[in-house]
View 1 (cartoon, rainbow, N blue to C red):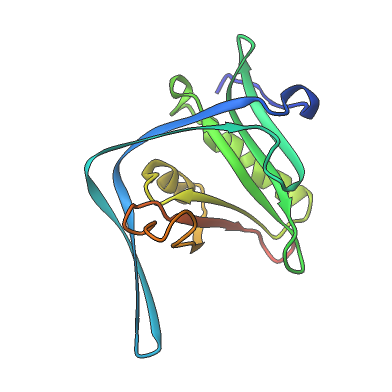
View 2: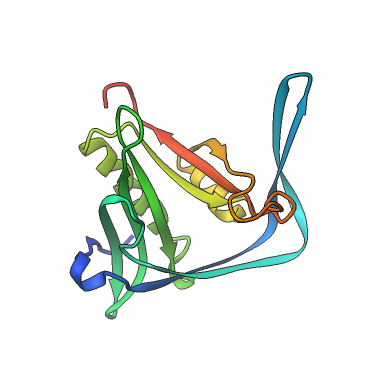
Length: 184
């Protein structure tokens, strides 16, 4: 990879808009049952009837987490990839939250996303945090597959985050975590 990842200045990049865009031909179908005092969850990758286009804007430094840091790659004065992290302090020991990760289409499949995630993992280790975690949508098959390839495990989901039909709409936020060793 010949790209330089740099820590972005909050004052300069606060509110800068970036676009997440991708597509999905498959979605992770979430099914929850409850019988005889037993809850069961099955999440399976299923083909969609038609391709789903995923596109939405995001702004930097607006996650609401403490100590937000953003790293990015700037090419020709344009931000082409980045990761935003912040500290979430529930429980005894804080975790690092990845609130945004994006790579412009022309820069994908070059190891940039993996390098950005490694920066987040390094931050968590250096700040002695217990885990790195994030949310992605059940319809965002590429993101789910990518995070799994980076060692993240499913740690939960929210079946009604946006509406009471999130499961039927394949719009369930899946929570993934990268748990750090006991020494951290």
